[in-house]
Amino acid sequence: MKKYLFLILSGLAFNSAQSQEITSGLRFAQDNTTGTARYRAMGGAFGALGGDLSSLNANPAGSAVFINNQLTFSLSNFDINNKSNYFEERTSEKDNSFDLNQAGAVFVFNNHSPNNNWTKIALAINYEKTNNLNNSVYSQGVNPTNNISEYFLSYANENLKRDQAGIPLSTITDFNYFQLDYADQQAFLGYEGYIINPDEYNDDNTKYNSNVPAGGNYYHENTITSQGNNGKLSFNAATSYKDQLYIGATLNSHFTDFRQNTYFYEVNDNLNNNIVDLLDTSFENDIYTYGSGFSFQLGLIGKLNDQVRLGLSYQSPTWNKLNDELRQNLVSSIQDYTDNDNPPITFTNIDSNNTVIYRTYRLRTPGKITGSFAYVFNKKGLISFDYGYKDYGNIKYSIEEDSRNRLINSDISDALKGVSEVRVGGEYKIERLSLRAGYHFEGSPYKDKRTVGNLNSYSTGLGYNFGGTRADISYAYTKRNSQQAFFSQGFTDGAKINSINNTVTFSLLFEL
Image (tube, rainbow, N blue to C red; front, side, top):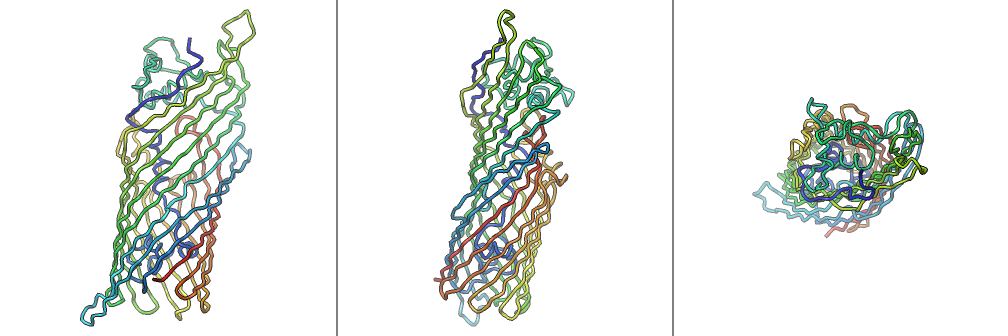
């Protein structure tokens, strides 16, 4: 008989991490439009413009456009509202955060020698939060068909999909689970939590079935809460040739700090009066990912005349070195009918919250190429256009196969695709006042176009030049729909999420 109080998960360095999934790789590959208020107000369309510290994100040649030394700080308020629809039951959840999202400086060295056509050298250093990962999503509803046992069965029977034996019962009944890999541990959880049963109670058994009563509805709640960010520190150098051609390069040091807690709860009243009936289950996963990375950028801007500018830039893949820590917590309530002389007794299985520390692994996120065009008219206004392309199918983990021979990188290339990105921005000056607006579109990175939909962002803002100081403010409205599965495999039902992000950014610029 299984113990009613037991350890759910504990261990040291396993071969693969549960966070190494498509959604995790995509999370670290995507960059939001962050940075200075001017950059955000114009939709990030700065590839042919430069002259703004955040323009180095679009084209590293942009620092050579600066005329004077400059110091910039930016503060942002991020407000996200997630509306969930799970089997026609609608809920919503909000998250709000405020922080310093950009700080940097550029130093311009002019060459006044009449015999040298290289007229300027610029050096810049810039910190920027590339992706704010704070978020909260809550879903609830009644699923008429599927339940959590399908998740655990997908691990216990996983190799059956490839005409191989599943996990032996002797493996998951061995309480020396320090040696179990992730897939074996999930099967262990399902078995010890009375969620799945072996077809036969012998050590050689490799087939499992659900212990969750069938024939009715399943009430589900799912909560996802995350905190953290992706950021980078950039070191840039650029030069100007006859003030007509600008060439630049940037080295980026990336960092990641991300925590996510998911809590799933299931209740059913479809009791079958088995020997042991499962009443409800709660399953919590707490993942902490941290690490660093490196990338570089190359770019140029050509000034065809006083009105027309063209830009071209290349952003290399980012080579990340990451670590994962995982805590799991499973609680099952059951009714045990083994004592026929007494009414059924309710037992609760609980755990001690231990943490799994996984081996350091590498994640390569895709590079990007951007072409840009800008038109400046009457020295009072401008309009700019950027087109970028990034192939998310090139996301690659350093571990090709996980413990159950599931090809992670192959799954990524099968699910994700290349994406076009369009940014449009405009600015018009009225004496010291600048009026700005922008638009940003990015296509769905998924081939099915449903798991994560298209991104549409509209922005506006204004700035005022006090002389040696300038103050800018912007507002951006960003919308994206997604279909979020509660689990990565097996039980893949999930909620339709409508996410709206409202961001207000304030920047102060000082000319030195």
